[in-house]
Length: 297
Image 1: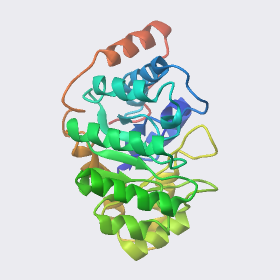
Image 2: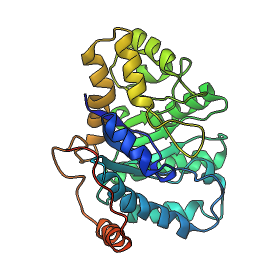
Image 3: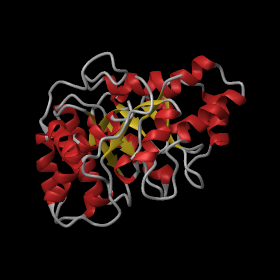
């Protein structure tokens, strides 16, 4: 079974993680642009970060036979920083049509401020302009209210619900998201958010339609193998193979395919190519940091 982790922050992970993910069957990933742990003070640092997702990280994944895609956005937390927020919005059109970009994201709410609402709406408009889906972060605090506000804003924006993936759901928010027609993401964490057993119960109750799971692994306490571990738990619980495949491969492929990409490897990464991969590849060969592919594609 091929696996897809549609939300993982590999910038914060090691090459050992890539090797372990490949060995566990993960064949494709999406890396959303996110807050990097401390406030950024210049718009240029966002541009450098976007370039690393488009080039360096994609090349790094390719050394292990993993297809790497990304989503780009001003994240909800830094939407509250007036020194950079509008500048990042102005920068995004330059990058949203690049090869490998499969959605606008993560966008959404953190503290549910007026600034977050403003830039949430603005980035949905960018997604509509560039014919891209959106990946939406739901807040860690006051999650139900944040999800209700998210769904209201999505409705008001006029974006088609099938172009929206609302992430980090739990037992309280999933009954709100599925009836909306949006896709529902679930982040499996070692100690917070969602665990394997709870996810198994949700799948038993709701099935696999528009359901997605991910590790959301980052620089905190997290595990890049949570998708295969959850697959194992679903198998042991007797969930049908067809439902599992739908959740961990078909659904993320079909959602992100709406960007014009082919995450399953049947076509190009997207509409255009960039020079950033070539730059990363030349740098790696010069530095001697070429890693052997751990398995045949």
